[in-house]
Length: 238
Image (cartoon, rainbow, N blue to C red; front, top):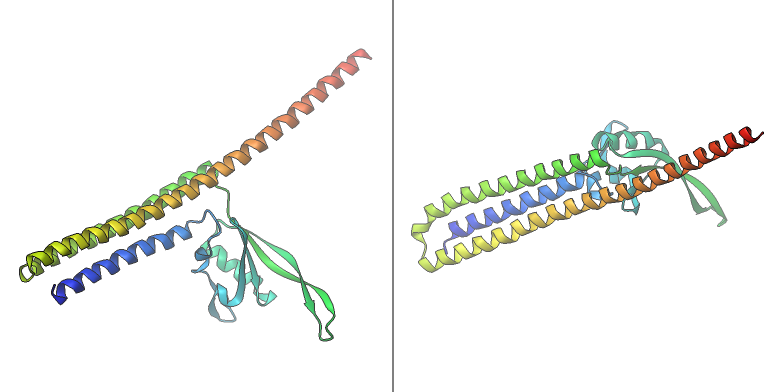
């Protein structure tokens, strides 16, 4: 197979890989769980320059739905919070205090209070459920369109290169292209289904918790009504 054909194949493979990677990165930015990748775009303005979040704070993930952003310097709390808000205004953020055990110069243990930003992912209620699914579908469809365009462009170039290739090489190329697209289409669809499942599970979690809250509220209202009726009966008996 000629160099030009192989180079065109490699270009197509790189494009398909890039488009799927970009799609996955955008999926991380559509936050359901606390994805560290969603913080990569956060730029913190500190003392006249923009820094990556990782350069001015430690990032911890206590569970699937929360971040702990611990600044290297307490004075950076507000800039960090503003920076995160600009990229992810949907995060619920508050400043908390963490007790850390340290040792002084004499080797004595002491407690030290460290302030940090606690960022919680918003619940996937009915409204957000629809918004998230629509956003993910848009990203998926864009990726699919880019991949189809890349394939169509390459087909034209492969057709122009075909007269200089041996028949068996063209057959091998056709099989390689089928496998290439099968692999990357499969990876793309797998990531899409995974994201949809993540949204679905988070929505089901909200539904269960919301139903529980409603049941508790109804039980409390029933108890208050029962107490009111009992009080009225006691007043009537008197």
